Length: 259
Length: 257
Image (cartoon, rainbow over the protein chains, first blue to last red):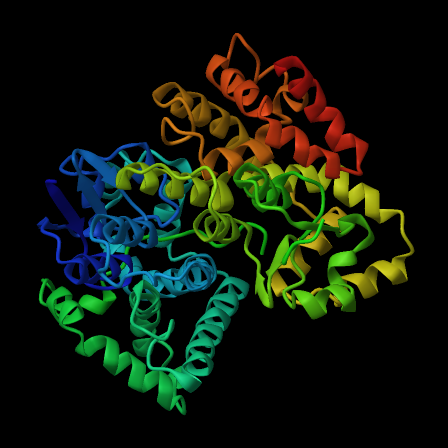
């Protein structure tokens, strides 16, 4: 089955999907993109409806038999369905439920906050350096109005104090969740799984922005190192094309509209 | 009914309807425990002892608790025998999961915001203010506390409601197109995505008759009737206690029989 993975720098959802692909043992052509310059929308990637309206925002796209799949957790499930026994998901239904509920918290609660903080720190300066016409040309092909609006907000550096405080609170909560969870285990689900990749991908880049949150959490620190030591994650890191790949974000999921 | 499964649910629609319809479709017997959302049963100590998140629905299977309605549906699909509610093809399965995520995070919150602002908020607002304040203070999840406060006190801004209406209108067009591409939502097999979507979309022909009808959205209407005629759907509505909801679906079911 021919597959092509269009991915950004190995951080956030692109890191999850790169490492999940390598864990699965499946082959795919790798095409790196600069997601922050909206290269996903430049015409190279055969986007379909689902990729255009992905709730993840500017994440990687895995084209499988001509169909553009998006949203890292669900691409991870797809890779596990294509390569049964890859270990990306536990076999037991109750543990699978637990893993999906965990991943839902990460993508719905942590990811919007982490993306907001990462983008304001690292993407806003890149977009602000573009002239108006250049920026408008980049975002013009974006199909979803609300995603295009998040690009404009990112360029303008719009982040209210409430929004920043809520985002930082999510990072605190996520690091505590992992620290607590690892009291009796090495990996989030006991054995290694997609939950480790998805959690790592959003939590690890926050070390550069909120170092205090990571202090006095020895189990979290050991887990971060354990994830980094996996050959799949090392191979994902090797795809980097910039000096600071962890900073390679682009407008991500929106903050939950209900609070 | 004797079963080691108990489903704690409100009306058989939206999130509560998701695991319920999945259980009934799979032929899995369960004990029904109705939680009255409008009486804040979900934040009372008896229920918090079962589901500390204070969200509905929840399910116990043996001694194990499950919450998060979409993840619960996948659990029911995988843990029990019965007709498969997921397609076999891996890309079809991805598309079904993608739609459930899109519904859960993008489209259905907009349905909910409108529904809460015009129905749930006004329903509960009549209660004693002190009782309401105490009820809000008991909500364990901060995001649910914000949502309830907005609904109870009518604090949804005009911008928020306008954005929700925009998404519902756009979502109707998306569903119409998607149901033109495949017989069901995201695949040619009735699946968890259909259960997820039907439970929030069944009221559209009665709430927005000018937008959802046989002329403008023939594929949505075909699909709604096809799901509504399933015996399992009819069975889940025997658990309804709020006539407003049943009034909206029963004509669709009767029409489809």
